[in-house]
Length: 72
Image (cartoon, rainbow, N blue to C red; front, side):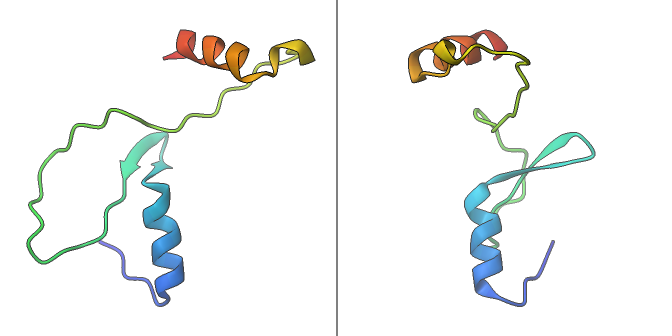
């Protein structure tokens, strides 16, 4: 559990939704008094990949979507 001093900081972190800690994804949710603590199914996690020397003609949305679908 984390307490933020500024609501702007809290909102920025909650907006991200997922952060990485020790190379593991951590799901961030705002606390509510009626929250049920349980494992949640995560179906999307932001991921950065490096593709060295990717030619500029593959930088379009269609090409990057196809490449990213191969990653996961």
